[in-house]
Image (cartoon, rainbow, N blue to C red; front, top):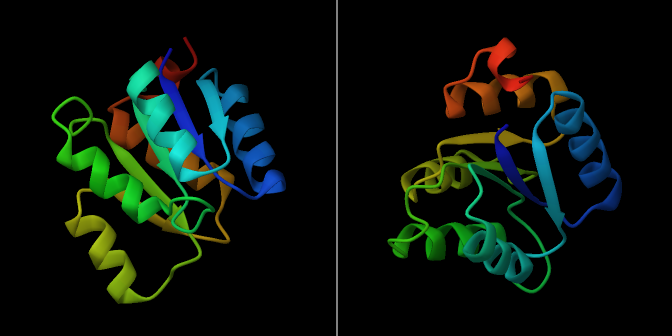
Length: 128
């Protein structure tokens, strides 16, 4: 079962993502800011990080930058999930090392499909 860290400061969005991912049998941990995200990434070494771009304490782009600069976390795939929808933001996220980039509002089904793709899982494999 893949372990996913969700860094999302909006409680309703975090609950929706957590529900949808747990429904798909992913092991999910949710944190509400970038500082907590970095701490949990260091502790739990998740299989994937779902990262909001705009959070209190430390934004998602800063978390991504620090993750990719640290050899211990650089290889962990990151999907940015953010309201930052300008082409410049998307390109920046991808160039910084994000595996994928989704703009809010988002489709939960599409999010699950993108997570499976980044992790290299078929639908059957993610439900084991």
